[in-house]
Length: 541
Ligand code: GLN
Image (cartoon, rainbow, N blue to C red; front, side, top):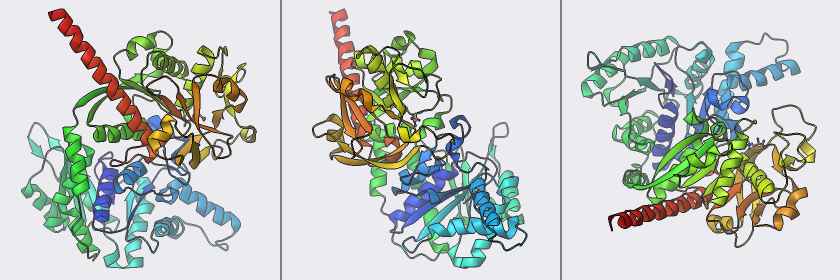
């Protein structure tokens, strides 16, 4: 799958939706993203630049599109599902240094393109029927050329009927003339052909439906059969995209091209989901206390997890994006008064920390549901240490190396590491939950696994002081060394985890902690409504 005309067309969602449709036809699907940038992985990228870093079970720090893929096809992917130009060059350069190329000149073609093809082939195991490979960026970008060359060659390697090319493009609407325009699409198809790739299907993204005539025109000018030109206008919700794509017949076209004999896709579950999305109407206001709030994509999986729970519970969530550094100290309470719950998400760096700590305290004292994720757990621990246990200036050594009470600290094994790559606890780790705890109740089991991405941990030296209070350590690593879950006794929901459960939430299987949190927020919202109502009755009486 390639993209034309503009970026941010929702190519990832298109790939994910197509994947789901093929899966519902009984095929085993994996999806891969090839990213043209030179960073070895997105792990060191600022979320402002590139949105969230999505973490896979095997500890891959990957592009956020992998989140869409996993959520839509409901399969766990591996780090092999994401390859960047940087990682491809790293492999080739390491081989060159080892002398693997026996003195030959190492070149983009064939060495880089061979490595790209190897990365694609890695996913094509015997169990898999279809690999969807999304080439990031836009046709015409300089850095995309080796990828286009590799996918062009791939068809020669594995045979015509085993590869098809889907091109996703934009059909802009020109307001003054009141028309959708096909010219940019024509040009991007020409550009693609110039690289030796004739698209087999074209997905036209547009604001409104473009109509059959225009689709036929695109088919004609691009030498693509009319049924292989499909239109996906902006959808009301992203859960409608697979249904739109199916109505347009793209999955049929792809199965024909690849000579895959399948049944019609079973879309009952997905239709029910999109129906639930439309009918969810219980208002609930959630504050997201973040650092990167001006780029919504920085918290993509958190927001999606909230949505999954909301859909299941019939809640219509309104998110209040709260810049943590704006609400330091007292200011916090005003901003939080009208909320039904707050989420303190993960993050790195000191900016906004005091705001997050204040927010955690406000939630604790005011029975406001509060969900802490990774850094969120750390902030809630610091807040409790300072304000309940009386450990003055308690902090994480990430933010204050000379704190008298390092309640959050590096574990000894990590202390000497200075390289920023590869020093984190990354990927899936098992936790043992305490029988009868709120979290065990929510998970419905006591041994669970969640994904991690952090360096710092709850400091076990302070464990006994916390244990004597209402602060309840409700989940630990199996060896009992690491704190994984905390909750507060006598509070509706003040729960946090050192993990990132947002990476495993799926539209039809919301992450348990999010479900518990949204449920608790809904209760608060209902109570507030009834309070408002009784206030009104009082006034009218
Ligand atoms: N900065 C914290 C740590 O490294 C939290 C990381 C996170 O929230 N992902 O431990």
